[in-house]
Amino acid sequence: AVHFVAVSMASSDDEPGPSYGGPAAVDPPVLLSAAEKRLRKWRRMLGVTVDDWKAYVRAKPQVVQRRTRKGVPAPLRGYAWQVMSGGRELRACHHGVYDELVLSTLDERDDDIAKDISRTFPSHVFFAKPDGAGQRSLYNVLRAYSVYDREVGYVQGMGFVAGLLLLHMSEEDAFWVMVALFRGAVHEPLEGLYSPGMPLVRRCLHQLEGLLGEHLPRLAAHFQRECVHASMFATQWFVTLFAYSLPLGVVERVWDVFMLEGVKVIFQVGVALLQRAEENLLALPFEVLAANLRHFPVSEKCEEADGVGRAGDDNVEADDLLERALALRLSRRLEELRAEHDYLNERMSDSGAERSHPP
Image 1 (spheres, rainbow, N blue to C red):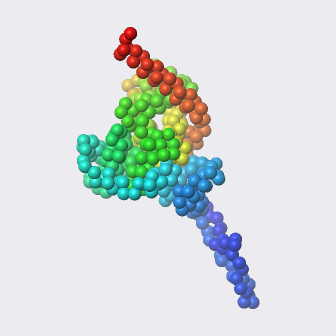
Image 2: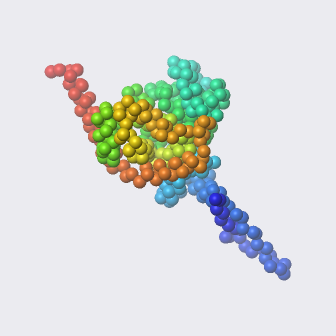
Image 3: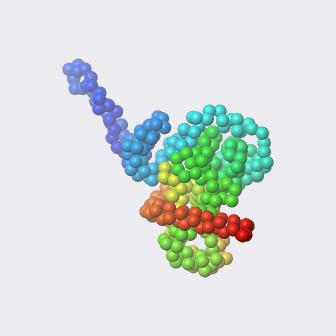
């Protein structure tokens, strides 16, 4: 059902018009659907400039969080992600840099990028055509980033991050949002998910296993008995930020929250997914469990053949998943597990140094 609200077009500051002896003319109310009313609220909240957005966030942070958790309206999602991540500001400060990167000399990573392009959202119409506009844009963004950050370069999971951004914004905007996310313009930098040795992936897996032991002790014990480790199913969660694993309409809603609140929501969603599937997973032996987890949660609910899915179903699914996920209070425990991982990592480094330099 579509709900409408009556909105007067007259400003509260309007003066009454001149009278000609008859009743004053009154503009009829304009009926706006709930979706249009929501769109207007978001336009006011985002403002015209990044400074407008920042001012609104400072003034009404709880309103921003509540509206974001309900979902950014699709027509504004690309711009909202840019301002939330800091990518919009980065682009403004680096005019012409992206074009230079795209046109730079080829390097050894280009072949790897070209081979992986067709594996990124292969069922989505935008990326399905070989050498089509989608694949060319994806290649350009990934190649530009590999030149921009030669230490990190290119890692396979980046394609899904870049691909999801390209569904909502231009090449250059997608590139600068990637830079903002990986370098940490607003939240914790994520480049450790892709840098040599993937140190942030290792830390995230340690944190996730700690959370499972507390929030899903039966499932954690089952995983331990069956020799199933978080790295077997959750590495792609972090490397692709769920862009590989969830239906498009659901991952867009997860990313709405991720852009505003940071990587914490990836843990919340991961724990919520496992909570929802716990009873089924507990009944599976290793061989079946490992096979199911390799494609989890895609194995639970397949996308539509066109890669887009049904918007209504995805919205219901996203509402249910995010309600469960955002009810989890994980911030303090994540910090404790982070400190624990850093301590254990430091001890291992010290132990390795002692073995390599005996007295």
